[in-house]
Each structure stands twice: as C-alpha cells, then as structure tokens.
Length: 275
Picture 1 (cartoon, helix red, strand yellow):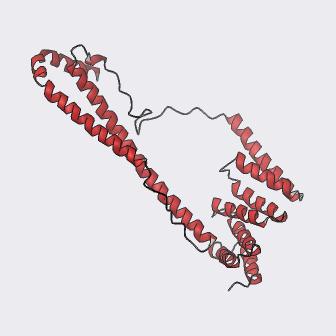
Picture 2 (cartoon, rainbow, N blue to C red):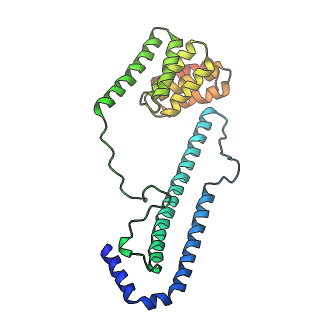
Picture 3 (cartoon, rainbow, N blue to C red):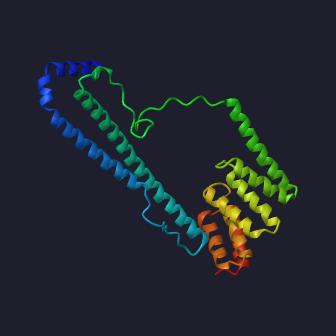
C-alpha cells in the first residue's frame, strides 16, 4: 500500500502543473463529498430519534394471549434492531472509507504533505470496522468458573432445603436472591416455580401467580413448564379470575399432552366448573 502511495506521490511531483490546474475541481469534489457525508450522518441521527409514544399491540383476553402478544412484539423489535444494526454498520464502513479518501485527496493538495507518511485512518464513530476481527478473548478461568457453578448450585440447594423444611419465608427470600444473583441461569425456571410454591404456602397467592408466570415464560417448553402453567391457572382461580384460570388450565393439556400436570389441571377445571 505504501509503495502505491509513494508512486502516486512521485506522479504528483512530475505532474505538478497539471495538478495545480485541477485544484479547483478537486476542492469542489471534496466539498460535495463532505456534504453527502453530513447528510448521511444526519439521516443516521434521525434513526435514533423517537417519533412519538410507543404503541405496542399487547391485546388479549387471557394471560397466555398477552404473553403471546409480548413474545410477538419482542420478535418484531429484535428484527428491527438487527436491521438498524446492519444499516449503522454500512454507514460506518462507508463513512470511514470516505473520510480516508478525503484525507488522501487533501494531502494531495498540500505541498508539504508526504503521501507515504499517511497512516491508517480512524474508524468513523470509534471502535472497529464492521466485520473486522476482534482481538481474541482471554481464556476463561476454569477454576473461577467452577467456583461460580458450585456457588450457584449451592444457593439453589439451600433454597430448596428451606422449602422442604417448611421455612417458606426463608425459601422465598433465597429463591429471589438466587434470581438476582444468577439471571438467565438454567435453574431459573425451577427457582421461580419453587418460589411460587413457597409464596403459596405463605398465603401470598398474587405474588405466587407472578412467580409461576415468570417460570413458564422463562422456559415455556422446559421440564417445569407444564407444572408452572397448571400452578398459574390454579392460582388465578384462587384469586377469583375464573375465566382466565379456565383458559390457562385448558392450555396445559393442549400444550403438554401426556404430562402429569394434565390430570391435576383437569381436576382443577372441574372444581372451577369450567365449561
């Protein structure tokens, strides 16, 4: 690359008078390039400006319908985020290339500028160019990771032990602390389910229903999903929301045929006189 730049510099020295004649046109081109680049930056800024109050479609007559609406809205926002990320990457790459080209052309116009001394330009907006390979991440500390995994399992087991002993207040607190300390844990769905059981035994049915809902939505196809859905429906029934309870309990057999929770859901629907 430097050999090419050096050759261009030699050509400019040999063709000095010709370059001087084209200075006006070259400056006009640079001015036009800067204008176009400014328009692109302004357009990019508008992408990060709100156009009004958000109006997501979260309609639904039951808890499950609203959960489905939330999932669909999250998928839509994820797609839009990916599209905007791609557009930002294209603007950054194009803008960086244009700025580098402008620096090169401005250097051509300055008599004391050495083309061979030009270094790699900085990325527009900082960071790395889209698609550039990042530095390799450091190797994870196996010993530290093992300690974290042991601590995670240990805290989960302690909460389960408190639940088995009938210390429901302690169990609910430990499961809540577990969720705060290990968000996204593979044990999160079971932790929410057991926290709901602890709250149920404490008589806090409303918070228990929220815990069951968190368990189901966190892993709607996992091993605890059927039980969490049944417990949610039963809790809604105890809260007097019979219509939503019947819809939720009916979803247990529809989503998880053959699961042990189906029989309990059917019995609970009979108790609530679901039609």
